[in-house]
Length: 418
Image (cartoon, rainbow, N blue to C red; front, side, top):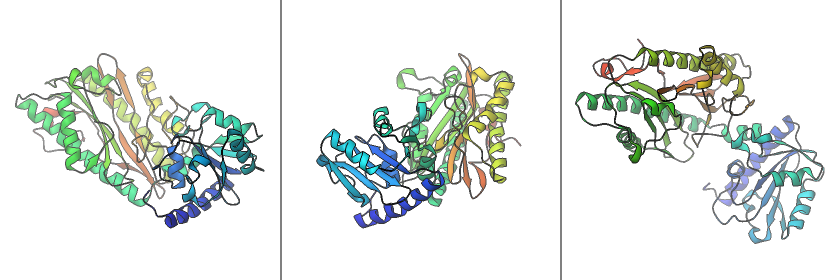
């Protein structure tokens, strides 16, 4: 984290006070953090710990609603949690560890841990079942820390929100530049393919100071019906006149703690988009906008809106159009320092995410319809919630499939209806 020991003490003191207030509001006796061999990176982030150094033994840190935090560490790595400045118990054996845990949790009846019942939200399910069993065997109710994690890990600072917006603007320009390049190459009769476009996007990322954990998706025709298709040199596809193209790209600025942006746009390598493609896009765009409007309406009214509800807003539009079975993934995901963050996901399909979308968070909205062996349409934009307003990143959003060869001779921006 780059903090001195004194700075670490100040950080954890402030963070413990914030956590204690949240625990009291949630009627919890405490939050029990646990890690084994870096199994819970969320614990390190939330507590402000560095992941550097040797971490081969189990440790616990109990932050109570009232009182000071206490740590349990192995004699092999007795200094592992010193940065917290917490009172610590050092154990050698398994029995000593369990005894220490019983002493630290004495009097607690309801404790949060980084787990998810039924692993419904895998992003926050970091504690193994056996460790949860140890705590429950002490007569303690263990509840999910999902809401706490969202509050203390998924919420963003002003600078982080600004970094997301900078990344969003850069990605939007890269989308336009990439589509223009494809049109120019096709018009000139020069070769262009999924892999060559992918490489071109990566070069543009580097030129704009962006980084990403994986290259973008460039999917042509039936490849676009695979939501997570990834082109390779062995399975490259040339892009020709009459082809449908899906471009999904995500990146962030290189500075520490920067936040990702994540967009998907679609195009047609011709002058006029086929009716079937246009019809499917129109349905997907309506589903996307139904979600955006629900979030904006609820946030403006100061009313809660859950990830599960927002997914249903999009899914109901696609189901009503007869394509319910072709919408195979959730409507959106939390966005943070990783492109898939730890906040509420827009999901009533893969999980039932009943967490509310909260202030200073970022998430994608990306419904899709996938027709095997034909094509798939996904339209993705990002949103943030800031000071009681739900904002769309990277406007203007895509309103129609980009007809690449027509757009090449038009002065209006591609995909933005006049």
